[in-house]
Amino acid sequence: MSTVEGRLRIAVQKSGRLSERSLDLVRDAGLRVVKGNNDLLYRVENYPIDLLRVRDDDIPTFVADGVCDLGIVGENVLEEGRNGGPTAQVIMPLGFGRCTLKIAVPPTLDYAGPASLDGKRIATSYPRILRRYLEAQGVSADIVTMRGAVEVAPRLKLAHAICDLVSTGATIEANGLSARDTVLESQAVLIRSPVSPEPRLAELLDSIIERMSGVVASQGAKYVMLNAPRAALDRITAILPGAGAPTVMPLSGRDDAVAVHAVCQEAVFWETLEKLKEAGASAILVLPIEKMM
Image (tube, rainbow, N blue to C red):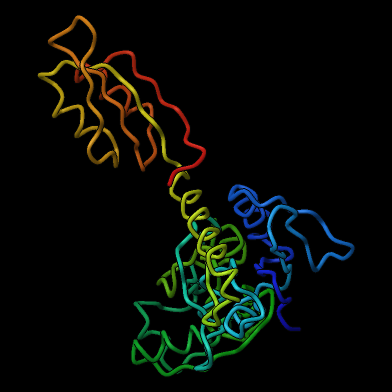
């Protein structure tokens, strides 16, 4: 498959845990996606862009080889695909699809850290990542590669331990295993091809990346407005989560109070509002932020 002249391509997961969130990010960046005649290729009607919907482990290769200009993929898939060949550039983490690749062991294995795996058999769907981890720990172990149901390997006597993705931990626990050391923290990332697009598309590509950055920056961010006594301004500013330097404006007819506007990059909980009120803030208003650049 080769690139289409005059059009950018973005690779996204066809199905799976990142699929819908990836499409949401593309739409939130202002791209009007239209389903094509087949499920592989979606068109963007307001820009010369195609969405290529493929298996997640194909995305790093497609982007690295220049078949696609951008891709959205889990860090676990990206790291497992690294083989010394061309690599895609990670532009930014996207804040969704979080999971952890962990060592998990049954109660029959006396586990006191990675050294306990020396000489053991470990089942995983991520043999390259696991191999690099074991080498970094100075551990020599046999890796059993499995493509699914890794958690049953100890029960079937295929392995002494496993290395698998953990989200809630429910599947691990249901199979009598306990998650121990972390091998890799993962989330969805935006990756870019090392192959430059046509010159007339380069500006569009940079614009799409900037838009996606704005969408990501607004995730979880809140716009907070409140009134505050001047004397309590420093204390109130310190309470606002991730606000940086807020905007402070005088209140009409009041020399002792000001209006404070701030973009909070972290979650604003009820406990935060209670602390602000205790510090003297009033008329507190918290608004969602749709886009931010």
